[in-house]
Amino acid sequence: MLLLDVMTIPKDDPIAFTFFTGYMAMFAASIFFFFERGRVPEKWKLSLLVSGLITGIAAVHYFYMRDYYMASGENPTALRYIDWTLTVPLMCVEFYLLTKAAGATKSLMWKLIGASVLMLVAGYIGEAFNPPGGDTGHSVMWGVISTIGYVYVLYTAWAGEVAKLAENSNNAAVKSGIRTLAWFVLVGWAIYPIGYMCMDGGWLNTALGWSSSNVDLFYNIADAINKIGFGLVVYGMAVADMDSKKAAVA
Image (cartoon, rainbow, N blue to C red; front, side, top):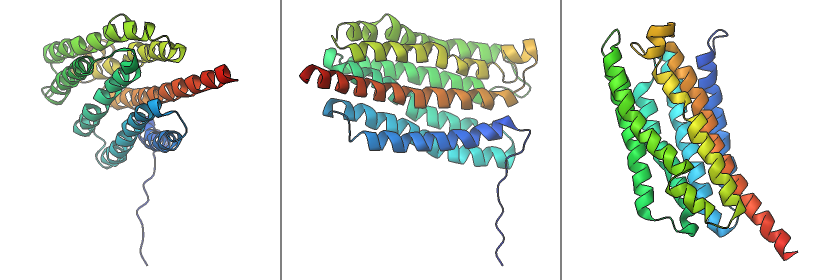
């Protein structure tokens, strides 16, 4: 008789819970975005495809990250940054796609991608190559470099080229959606630095005693909020634009 080793979630481990929940939530969101893509007007299809890819890529990585964490109890740092290196630039591509009709150029897209890659590479060096026992100087230096990329994306979404293009788009759905996505960058993406500062030698680790075990908890929550939330905003923009045109025809 074949006995299967069933993976169980410890009742007192919120990190394991968020890994399992995050995986299923990302997977379900991908199915939703791919199916709804066929219902929206043509100009929104690519944006919804990208939204489905973001959550789909994340679901695959969460499948492996949850198993890695359950088997080792350690942070799946490399897997997580591989995921982010693919999904975060795609989130920045959404800004370009949503404002393309208003005049967004490919140079804007590449600048946003470059800023996101800088943010991620610096964050990975700061976290993955942190000396044993932690080094505040190391984590702070690479954290500051990472923040430069983040601030550029934030500025572009709130007051820079993306914000200006959305304002000049003459499309209420685009204006509202871009502002909502800008809030995600301001509030939702801010959860990641909290996790970063929990690692050994980080400010929250040294000041408040928050351990590296808190890193994954913050990262998992942030991923679910931001990746699924980004896609839902894009979907909402497509539906609102479609409904407004139906109302105008009626």
